[in-house]
Image (cartoon, rainbow, N blue to C red):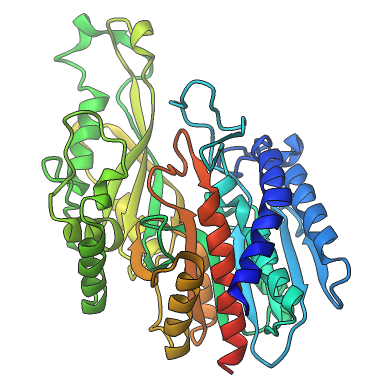
Length: 471
């Protein structure tokens, strides 16, 4: 592949087509089903799917044998499935998603989740980086090869609409499409992150996830706090004590040993290498409030904390009024949404059941305590890189950035990767993405770093060219 020519083509497609398409897409509030149970009636997901399919279908005109289909199984979110013929027996599968996280508060003035803003080489708005760009990047990478007459293996692109809800619809589609997917020897996932915007980052592991809603009820209705406090136990205090069974509130460490897994020595070495390269960038990318410090001042330990160790986040509360509306009332219940990130190699379903048992057992004062699991997702630990792929990602990073690639685990969860890891144990995986410092996926002011999007597209083209050459 002529990297200079490929870069020119990719840059032109991004500037003329991809950025305008993503701008339109950001305006669509196609929240994932977990956040919009009436998604089918609202029609936003169908609108996003139709937009993506129309663009991709237009780009595939004239590509002999190419096929695009919006696949719909009864009662499930749709997927976009693209097949592009190629040479050789090996196949490549490229993955992304188009469903979005909910709005979140705290957007800067003039910015919003459904209001695209292009500023300083960044496209702000929900979903562009996480990861609406994936279809556009994957298809543009393949077309860059075809424009030069560079051979590649047969490729399939799979874009789902349920990832932010745990990909619970995806296994049915993978089974349904199995004859057409085949047994890929290369899987490219564009739903991950990067530690900087200066080189290609390969994700080597992903944490699992166990989450759900915990409710503590002590009364049928609220009562005067002066009358009841000291007699009726506080639902908040009980919830706080139950969470202490799971988490040491002084350190953030998860208490039960069964939520841990042994960190492979190779991943420890990777964390130390990444920490040496990044230094304070490991934590400075986060918008700390003034005076707040990270959990430790050791960057390698911070990397291991967010990639191989379990953690608890309380992501939502119910049962309490706003402060300005709060009277002197002892509230009847407190509910919290819990998100527990798990080591990549841990059984997420077993951990979810253990979490339920831990929180519900023998509640203080006989309080009514329930934990309803809402989602669990397996983590993933990448297989060892083949020699050709190790050389290819460095070649791709040099072509796109002028620097070798870097590797690190990610703290997030992509259930699809664990599923594919089990289905295709012999496949090689390139898990990468554009979610870097301050891009703030799921939060306010989320943005797509356009230069990174273009560079990742070029890197994918190089890897696909090398994949066929590897035999």
